[in-house]
Image 1 (cartoon, one colour):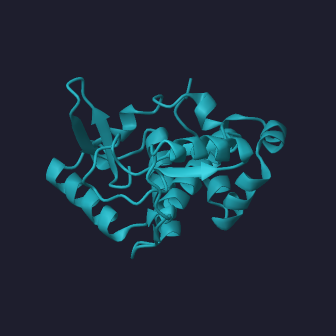
Image 2: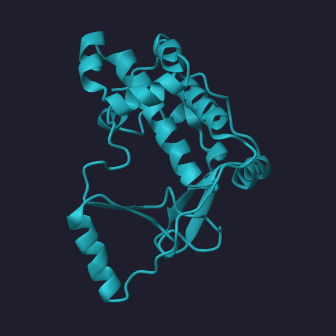
Length: 207
């Protein structure tokens, strides 16, 4: 979520929000399936309508299942579905919001990609910071980092760079060239060779 915490919904219906920095990065190498690591449809490009948390303004008060969501309508089918909800007063629509923050998106993307890849190579930090430190880091990033649509762009760019590294590291050059779409290549070009540099580094087995 935009508060840099993982939100766990417990069986009793309550939520536990754990700072991302509290997670044991080196132990989570195989949590995400290789099929996800080679996918370049992160924003669900082929769907008629998409509902998700990434681009919505985050106020920190409502839980995930009651919070505003961002909605992307891509065609007439998606518009029809949204219109049905409007007719039955099942949706409350507000304009999108975007805030760059003092911590600029490009720098955060690079830091996240590099830290994530170090963990995938088993070279993340040993142990976790004290919970109070992790909470402080999450608060600082939430306060100073990108929000709303700017956070969505941060998340998309990070995931695409992460997946580009995976594909180029584990696939043949010809297969990777045929698989990677043009929009992912454009994101790659914005970050000045970081994918090529990291993809050359050996990693822990991912299977």
